[in-house]
Image (cartoon, rainbow, N blue to C red; front, side, top):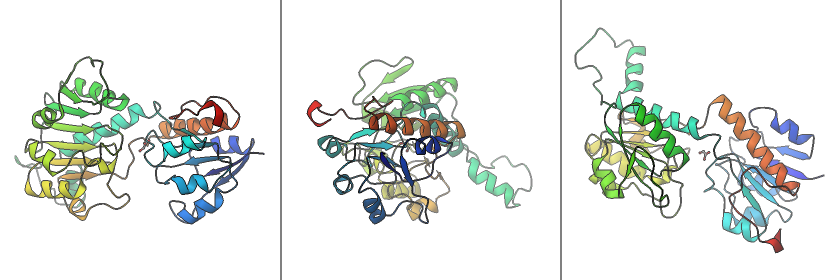
Length: 322
Ligand code: GLV
């Protein structure tokens, strides 16, 4: 019987389905994330691994599991996995694209609206009992309707955000270093122009060496003082210390962040900053979507273990190491 390690319990009954077909070990705590030494120990005799974005699947993990055939990530992003090394070792790497596109775009737009209109601070104000009556200057925010949004990374999620922006009559511009085909209703611009022209900038790029600190102090200096930055992609795409400083100095007006550079830690300059709205990496977290991700991750894993094509893989293996 094939052996599988799952690094966390998942929504739905998909792990029960899997446990009827192979020997499944699920890490259920006490820590939030499976400790590194436990991962290395438990994976030793496994054929498959179902991982989360919080698990670093590097050379040491792959080398600790000589029988490993598949790493199925419960996420669309897979910067936590050394894909190149997996490919070299004959390990298929799978992810969950598509099913979370609209949910993540909803979250980006929710962050955009709540940051612009100071929704979280206003909610706290009411709950604290401070609301004593209507005032002309109470929580004056920034308009969204009719403004310019710059989308960095026009993949599935970027395009889903653009569709929402169109409904708000926004002018949509985008930068993408890969996509060459035109996107209806959106204008492609270079990165600097996007920084200079946008009232809102929403990040939808994967995290790679090239996108590390793509938004740094220099980039923020180019942005408008009323600009609001939204990040539902990956934390290290933004230089978090520089962002904290730019918010403090008024270089830009606000930030809506679902991801952080050193998760779960958040820069103290952001924790204390009322111009920032902060979420605990919940971009894809709707009930329906988290269930669909579980179904997809389990099917990816099971298919590879059975010599079938997974629903979605990010690498191809050479014939001779399959
Ligand atoms: C979550 O961050 C994902 O990549 O799906």
